[in-house]
Length: 272
Figure 1: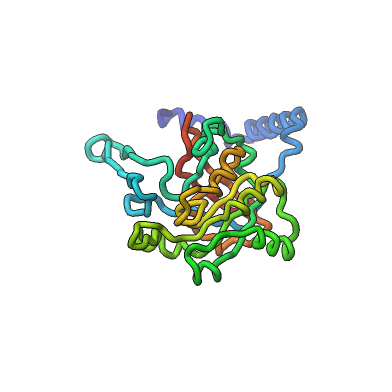
Figure 2: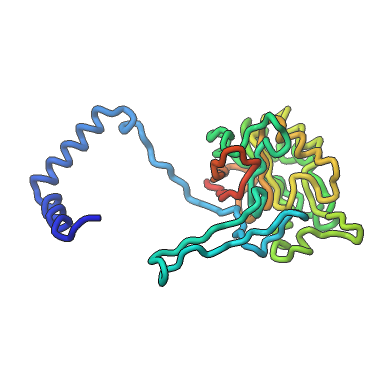
């Protein structure tokens, strides 16, 4: 913390013509000596869309998983500042499934390479089919149809399913969509499409706007097993996929780097 007199002295110093001139020459000299500075270019984007649901105790959870609990630990009146403690399951809200979630040899959340968290994004629109059939799955034909219009999926891309299911996220019963036998019904990736994207298109990961990479009534979790043991990641409970283009955007995944974590809540952005 600076004393007021020190702050005023610094302001007077940096505002003098002599100091400004010296600082300018020093910065120019530093730039001339540093190739990295000369080559640096600012990141320019015209659009940023947040694909993250706000996580709260009311956000729908996988059956058997506890909901977020927030406990206040410090308050302005008592402590002079504000802070909370969270009790949160790794697979809560908009979150990443790390490979470790389905593979003992897979990357933990801390091990996922940083370069695979900033990647081109592809959006597969299956909304019309999902409206008719809540058990709809992304098929290899959906990938082929997308490529017929937009070209081959880039190597290392993220492929996201847009089913429109996020409109139910405010109601846990509607989002889970359980029948009388407590079987859930919502869209996801078919195991065949997930395997195709991993083996034939070398994607970085896949994502969905539902509770699971697999459709709700799956008991074998074939999409999970096609993606995660191949050291690719998955993202579940995405939002706002209708606000980004089917191609041309870049996905930015902000995943907490927690040792031995099988995943974690994430801030996911699309920029272009």
